Image (cartoon, rainbow, N blue to C red; front, side, top):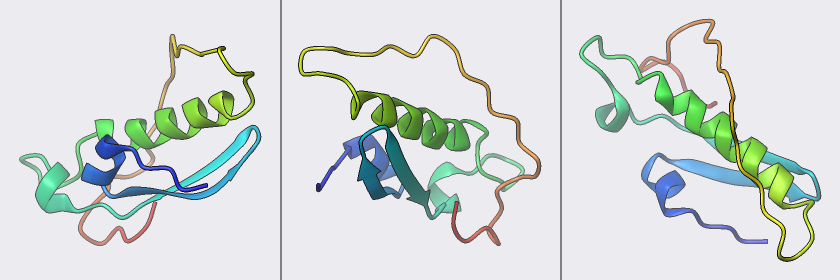
Length: 88
């Protein structure tokens, strides 16, 4: 299934696999678009990936007319996303 999300396109996030209840997103960070003053990716960037993957995984398993809402999620970063980060 070809899925396009304009916000994901802007952030270079792509769907690699989609199955009922499962989604695999990959991202190649472009720091010229998402960096902060320390020249690392903004912390919200990995959050967008997590939220998108979780949301689409849930939506893929819902019946037509049902919907989901994310009320809370947490992302704990182990290291910064830098110019050397190739693929998330």
